[in-house]
View 1: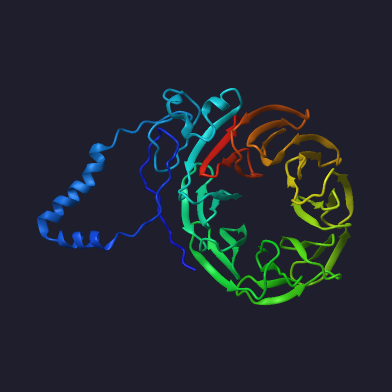
View 2 (view 1 turned 180 degrees about the vertical axis):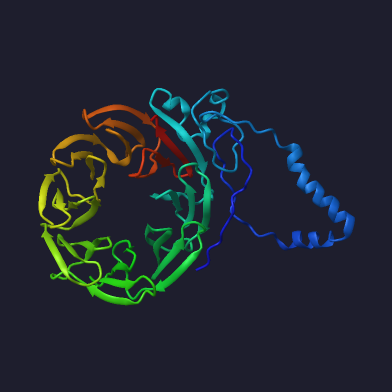
Length: 426
């Protein structure tokens, strides 16, 4: 697989949302022939001088803007602290979330960046990995930004268009994905391929790892444990009932996996030794939070299990079959219920706090405040302590979003690639 690294345009302007940058296109042959003809002394010097100076002479002066003014779109993202709104209304359609929409709230526009998508291309996934924000397109083009200021870290095609990818995970400066039948590691700073390893069978969920091993859940109903240094298999493990594995979580000391038949099994990380097992009536998805495991089961229940023993702490029954993992906040677990919305369950007690109709996911938290998004593209702020809605912002279209469990920054984007960072006042 070939990965093409492209560099963003380095000029900055603080007048508007970012217009992105163009992907690299090699010069055509006629142009190269003309260049070769000009390789004669003073003529080449004059041409070079004009090419260098012309943009400087024609470029308008740059000025620092405050809080999302509109103007000529710069080629790179800029940090835009809140401030004046002069000239904003003239071209507010450039903004995914117009500043007028956030004026009555505690939110501010931090930056906006326009991803370099082709006409027949759309944004497929938006993911937070540490200090990185990754946008993956429908044609497997990956753009990785510094999520604090929106500056481009790298952009590259990580697989041929149309070739399916199975998951995109991160571990200590590397991105991990499955491209076709290959397990690929990508440097998260430069976008370069580190390793590519053929797999003997398909995978059923994203690959995870710790310092010593990779854990690959195969379509053969086994977890294949590969040594991190050389990708050689050291052992494999399966559930006693030989059911398909749907989720794997890995730590330095243990590995927890869930199966299609509802088993949640914990083993030691370096050998196939079972520590505990919890059996639910049906399969589901897992997420870990501190010393607890939250299990969204297709039997309509959300379970909280003790990490050390697998003992049941509580279960909450919802109104529909669950098909996605819970999202863990500070004091609350958020669960999407198909065709119903989003619910918030208190971690300590397992009691329902509130329900948001048509809600699809958590964006971020700030203290007791949760920021959520609905199927129609409405950003909603909820007070978890008082279990009430504070305000909402209608973005006007469905959006892609990333769940940020680290801080209060909010990341949303539309299908065209307008990517916006918002943040509540601290």
